[in-house]
Image (cartoon, rainbow, N blue to C red; front, side, top):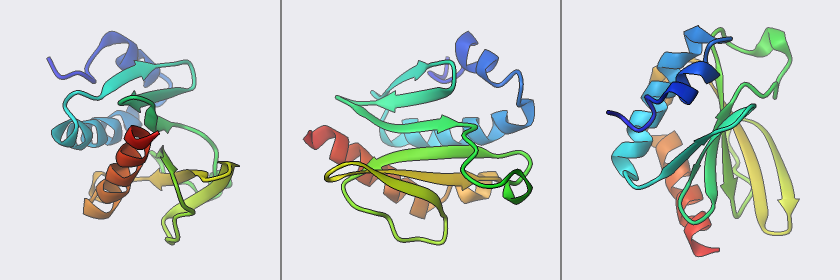
Length: 129
């Protein structure tokens, strides 16, 4: 069984079933790189961690509703720097030296090598803490 195909993860997408393929594409690529990553389904997000959380997926409203694709998923990464990209919907310095970065995904094709490189940077940053 694929680690992201558990009952809690499927229930998380009940209100947004059209976004499930986005999550599955993201999770498949993430677990292809980090098969030992732990996944935890929470009420408002699904977190992925090694020693610490390095990535989350959610339906956080980081743009005006009219600006969000349908379906959409927000990938949130913890980075050591402010990511400069037109793909970044929002970023905040949660505390000195730690940036929370939100990226809106509207199609599986957006889960590309650039996004996965940012996931790698978040994974490495999380491991180094």
